[in-house]
Length: 95
View 1 (cartoon, rainbow, N blue to C red):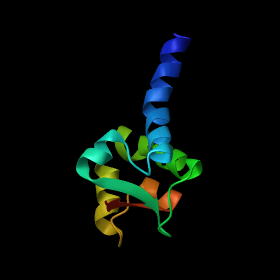
View 2: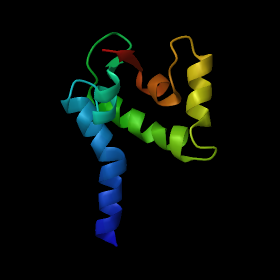
View 3: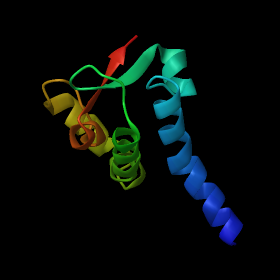
């Protein structure tokens, strides 16, 4: 059971954090869409930026009503940022 919990944690939080930090702000999905994450100052994301984005994604995407918070925040913010981007000081841009 502990192994399952650790594996789920690594998949849900470890993968996006590791990929964004090590692969210039991209995950496989972001690379396929031609987008990446950068800081609002235009620099590369650090571990703390990616970790905050991943933690807030729990609220944005996983809690009911499933993505509606992310969509709403992206629609009402000036730079189309979801809650995780606002908290982390990041923005998603086309590459």
